[in-house]
Length: 415
Image 1 (tube, one colour):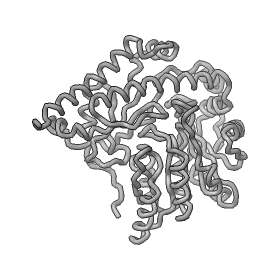
Image 2 (tube, helix red, strand yellow):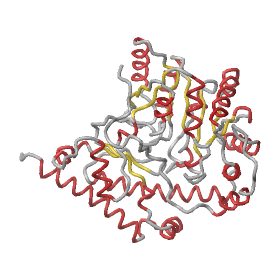
Image 3 (tube, helix red, strand yellow):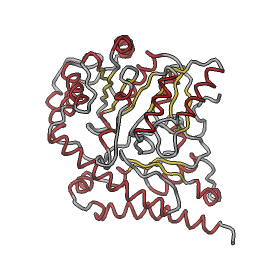
Image 4 (cartoon, helix red, strand yellow):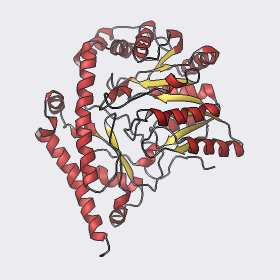
C-alpha cells in the first residue's frame, strides 16, 4: 500500500495557509483584543472558562451541544490536530486532496498517512468503498488504521459533502472502528445556506467524532491563531480529553490571552460579528462564482465552489498546451500560474494530490484589491464585481486561462 510522502519537488517547507478573507480586521474585534492586551496572565492550557463556555454556546446553536469539559482550545487547528493524532495513536487516513496542514502533523509524529479517493461530486470525505479497500490493504500489510480526518465544507475543493455521501463514509469508518476528526473550519461560510445542506458527522456518530474548527475560517483574522475542538461524550471522550490536554501541556500550546478574549467574543456571535460574517461570505461567493466561470470558459475544470474563499481548478484538459510550456506537473503549474496571475496558486501536490495531476487552488481574497481601502470598498459595495480593481483582477484571470485555452486549441490535430 503506497503511503503518501512529502514531495521532493519544489519548496517543501511551503505550506499554503488558510485562504484569508483579504479584509481589514473588524473594529469591534480589534477593540476587544486591544482591551485585553494589558493582561499579564496567561490563558490556561486547553482554554480558559470564558472561551470554553463561548464555544459551548456556539455548538449548541448548531444542534450539537457539549459541556465545557468536552471542549478544548488551542493556538490554531494544527496544534489541536497534532494533539489529537498523538493521543489517538495508529495510522491516519485522509481524503485526496485534503487541507494542506493535515498530513504534516501525523508525519511529524512518525505516523503513516494514507490518502483515500473522494467521490466525484465533492471533496473532503472519502469514497466509502475506497475507504474500506484502503483499510483492508493497510491492515493486510501490518498497519493499524485508527484515525480518519475529513471535512464536510472542504479546503481545498470548496465543496460541501451531501448528507447521503457523508453518511455512507461515516458508516464505513464506524464499521472499521475508526475515530473521526471532522474539520469544520469552513462550515459558517456556505455560499448558499438556504440550498446547501451541511450536516456534521457529530450528529450522525456522536460517540466517535471529534469536531475541530479553526476560528480563522469565519470569525477571526488568519493572523490571530485560535481554534476549538469538541470531543465525544462518554468514557472515550473523557480519556481523549485528558490525553489531549497532556500533549498541549507538553507543547505549552496556549491561546494568547488577548486572542482568547477576541475569540470568546466572536464565538458568542454578537450582531456586529454575524453581520460581518454574512457580508464576507456574500462577497466571496460572488467573486468565487465569477472566478469559476472564468476558469471554465478557459477550458479548465472545477466543481462549483459552495463554501470558503477558494476554488480548486483542474487544468488536465490543457495538458498538451501546458507541456509545450515545460509544465509537466503540479509544481510547474504552480510556478507558471503564480507568475502569470500575480497571486499564489499552490499546486494540488500541496494538498496531497498526485504531483502529476495539473491542479491548483486559487483564493478569492487575492482578487479583492491590494489596499485596505479597495477591500473595504468591495465589502460595502452592492456590486463589487463592477469595481474597477475587481474587474481588472477578473480580466487578468480570464485572460490567462483564455490564453491557455487558445494554446490548447492550436495544438489540437486537424479533423
